[in-house]
Image (cartoon, rainbow, N blue to C red; front, side, top):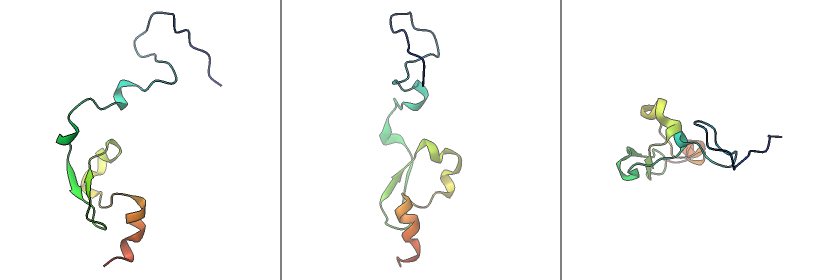
Length: 74
């Protein structure tokens, strides 16, 4: 369990309520400007994701379903 947070106390830098997201995970820019490329299996466009940042050049499939179906499709 987590300790209850006193919401009446002044906000401290770096400390947020457990139900709030941190600023690092929120995207506040222009999503249309993110890189994209087509999925090898289905051909639909994939938009860049933060989790793919380290290996974007190696990403081929938009989902686990497309990755699993790669052998069955021509």
